[in-house]
Amino acid sequence: MKVDLIVPCYNEEAVLRMFYEEAKKVADGIENYSFRFLFINDGSKDKTLSVMEELAAKDERVKYISFSRNFGKESAMYAGLKNSDADYTVVMDADLQHPPSLIPEMLAVMEEGYDCCATNRATRDNDSKIRQGLTNIFYKFINKISDVDMPNGAGDFRMMNRNMVKAVIAMSEVQRFSKGIFSWVGFNTKWISFKDVQRAAGETKWSFYSLFKYAVEGITAFSTAPLKAVTAFGSAVSLISLIYLIVVVADKITRGTDAPGYTSLMAALLFIGSVIILCVGIVGEYIAKIYMEVKNRPVYIIGKTNLEEPKHDYR
Ligand code: UDP
Ligand code: MG
Image (cartoon, rainbow, N blue to C red; front, side, top):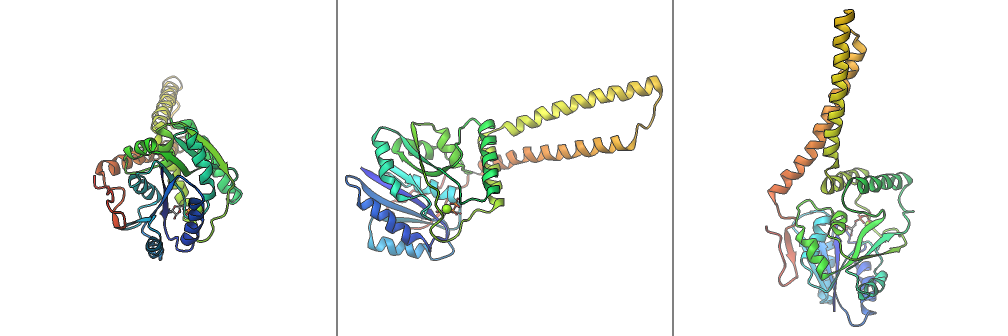
């Protein structure tokens, strides 16, 4: 049986060797499975690629794909999955926040007959309180409004069988949101949890702004609820406006009151105005998605690789 470890790497020169040593130790301790380390260099600006080449030179199980520029972790995972042909495929981070020591347990779960063994972090002690709070709100919200179930704390660290990998790569959307995709394809998944650890070295690439963008991305990718909310809200405001209009006109006819006041006029004007802009913005988010999707650009472009028959994404 073959197992592929897919590891997206962006500026990971500080931890990559450490990761390899750890993963190799685990792989060497497992019998009956042949491992392959498939590193994806996502346009790193440091010496990540040289480290990959160096590892590949001394271990033939090490394969790498180097992108022509930074395409993002989603693209890196997609490239890895597309280029994997193993019975079991694992997606994991390079910074050792996804402990390779969990792999034997994952294999045992797969042997029980599951299609997928997914992991979630038991605690998030290493995140700030604000970030934890915002994360909780995001998951509550997205689970309410979308048709997929995304457990809080679920990372991308998981092992999948060939069937599931095929389904995941069949979802060839350009703007990928893997958490949603993994859940959308279904399959028999067992969840196991592991303790949250600090990244071994190097720095996280997530800022608050990028997390916010990620949240918007996730919501728009798997739910059209905001669009429906716009319609519902617009209808409600129209109804209220109509009633108010009738009141004002009736007042004018029966009592002859004129110029009902600058304050209420201004309030209504500003309120309706800002709501319209917000709604246009929400609609715009979806139009932007359609726009990028119809262009159908490749999700990644390979600059260099040591795979014999690399699978490109030229659509
Ligand atoms: N990563 C990537 N491309 C990017 C950003 C990140 O391939 O544009 C990789 C990174 O090298 C790491 C994984 O994605 O292996 C997770 O990144 P990070 O540790 O920064 O995220 P966090 O663990 O803080 O969520
Ligand atoms: Mg990390």
